[in-house]
Length: 143
Image (tube, rainbow, N blue to C red; front, side, top):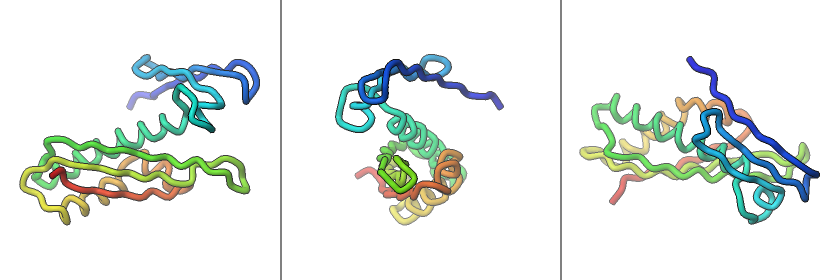
C-alpha cells in the first residue's frame, strides 16, 4: 500500500503567526491560523482536515458495506463534526459526530442504520480515532 503524505508550514508565534497545510499531491491546500483554529477566523485547521478524512473514509466504508449486502448505494453523504475541547491534558479532540445520509434503493432505515454501524467499526480512520475520541453516528436514508 502507498504511504500518504501531507505537510504544514507555520511562521511566527502561536497567536499571531500563520501557516499553510497541503496534502502530498496538492489536492487540498489551505491557510490556517490561530483564529481559524480556535475562533471563527478565515482558513482551515487541522480538525477540519481530520473531519474531512473521517467523513471520506466512513462514506467509502459504508458504500462497501452496502454493496456487500447486495444493496449498493446511489450516494452516501457524510458530515463529520470534530469537537476540540480543553481538557486536563490540554486541547484534545474529544468527540466526532458523524451524520450520514444515503440514497439506497431497496433498503429500509433499520438495515441502513445497522450497516452504517458496521461501517463505523470497520472504517480505518474510525479505528485510528476511537481509542481517544468518542464517535457518534446518525444514519438515515434520503427522503
